[in-house]
Every structure is written in C-alpha cells, then in structure tokens.
Length: 134
Length: 76
Image (cartoon, rainbow over all chains, first blue to last red; front, side, top):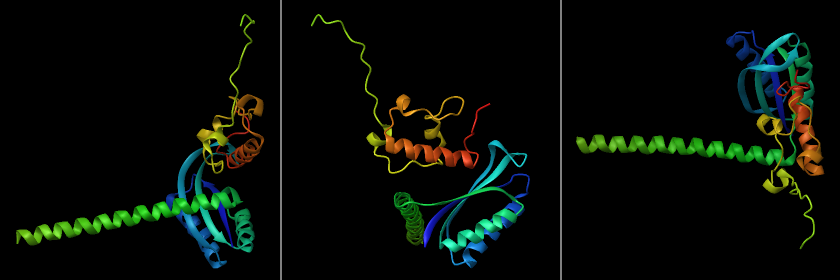
C-alpha cells in the first residue's frame, strides 16, 4: 500500500451538486478498488494560470489516498473518460512527506479531541450550574 | 591595513538547509514564487544560493505546480 496525493481540476461551470456527485464517484472507485480515502479537501474555484481545455477557471479538489498501485491505474483510466475532470495529477508520497502528513493528521485529531473534551467539560459545568441553582 | 578595500559580497546560503526544511511542498506557491523571475522562469542557483540538492527538489515542486496550473509556464 502506498500513499498517494491526487489533484483533480473539475469544470468550474458545474453546479455544486454535480461537483459533489463527481467527488463521491471518485471516492467510491477508490474504496471499491481496495483503497482508503484519507483526505478530500475542496480548494474551491480558482483561476487557472493557463487555459486548459478552453477553461479559464477550475474547481480544485485535493485527495489523499492510501491504496495499492492497481487502484491508481483504474483511477487514471476513469479520469481520462470522465467529463467533469479537465486535468489531474497523481503523486506518490515519499517517506518524508508521509511523515509530515502523519504529523498533520495527528495534530488535527488532537485538535478535534481537545474540542470534544472542551465541549464535554462545558456541558458538565453548565449541568453543575443548573444543579446548584436547583 | 592600507590595502585597497576589495568589494565584498555577503556569501549566499541555502535557505532550505538553514531552515532545515523537511521537504519542499509544491502546493506552497508563495515560497515557490520567490524562486521565479517576473516572467515565471526558474532562478538559477547562482542567483539564489540554493544548494544542489534543494535546487533539484525545488525544480520538481515548480514543475508539479505548473502541471496543475497553480503556477504558469510563462507569465505573459
């Protein structure tokens, strides 16, 4: 299993629903082919630095997968015939990048955990306050 | 003493070595822009003082950024 980073530029003239549909289709393909989606960041509509397929704007989506090599082959085949995609790039991450990614993911998880804890603590405090009032 | 002062230029150093960067991210456009001319060409090692290893990494990142239209191949 390797970790891959995948940029996809979708047609910006598509509606938001069509974009989410396209993204879920890509995700489904990865999951069905034995991969795991670690991240799917929407960068949103951006101006392209140069025209691609006569488009000046594109909707950027950044995926991070953990998947075997065969999955990526299937994915690239899909991109070639999948109309909403105007450009894509798949990159295999090196050991240093993987380390960095893991750190970032761990930090995110910690933040989430901290936020959850805070919420729980606040809840407890308010409950106590309610009890003391009663 | 008494010698004519030679023009002395401060020695350039590799930014990535001194900052101990783990790797150069191709998504970090702000950083990459600093190593390009106004026309979008890559600056030489002589200009920026980057070491050979990091110049190679930098090249790769810039090429990737250009591939997905974050950076342009030619600016106007």
